[in-house]
Image 1: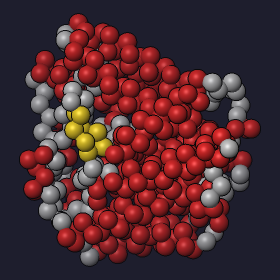
Image 2 (image 1 turned 180 degrees about the horizontal axis):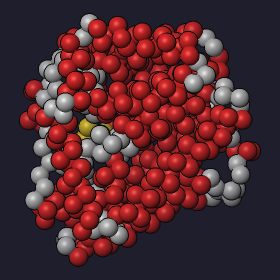
Image 3 (image 1 turned 180 degrees about the vertical axis):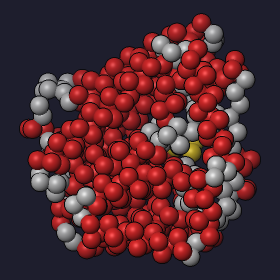
Image 4 (image 1 turned 90 degrees about the vertical axis):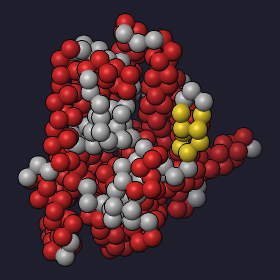
Length: 404
């Protein structure tokens, strides 16, 4: 009886995870002191806590990416303690809430590891189906948004960038949506490797079109990395993807101008370079523990740095944000999480004779997100973190017996 209840709760958890990803940023609840929390944040509060309980009681050998995650948490805590030298303790406590949030999202790895054994529903038995369904729903809502709400000028007073004629869906940010779609495309391409069913190609083509219509240059960088990785063994599909891209490029002056703007360093590109330069200046003064995890919005005035975009709590680069807030030790630990997950996934992918879907999704999908993270704060964006940690958890669960 108890087992049946746990199974039902696990099933609901997967359903609400999918709903949270689909709702994106359009459903937020203001919380005193903390700020606004999305529906996904409330879902992860429960699912991540479940995962942390599993982690505490886990008795088997832990993969290397978990140890690096623990190291990052320790460094982040030390950085917050160190920030008391120039910040009020109330601010430090408020900033630490986002570290708690990061830990809960990381806890999804163990939640996935624990709940997959309870799933019996055909569609949801493979957890990646939930992620794919959420991505497809985001794409459909994105095209609806592009038709009926192409101008985000009305949202500027709420702190969002006034994007125009760009697919942003419920994320309200085409750049971050593009990164999430890349992860979704990595999962879809991985599933095609396993099943060779052309229905996956149809879904992949739809997601590919959506990525192009975000007109996000950071997403295009990640897409190029993902497609090249996929094309190593699947050159026919690579040619198909290139033909789709060239077709859209030929008939889209907007896409042409975006790519030309990156090459010629337009205003947006120059701003991102300046943002990175400011980050290096701050890191130079705080190399060991940074200014404190998630304290940039309070520490930046000391360096006369005022972000122009919707990134007041960080930089338009995940790695720079991590480096500035936790110093070089934090950056090394974070890169350790990423590369150890890539290594484990690629090892699984190679041992399956390059047919394993999750191995492909985590290895090449993560490299693609890493490439885009130099230009957008993707690795610290809640929906992207959720998709990535869940995918890593699914990969780890299937690979448990082969850990070395």
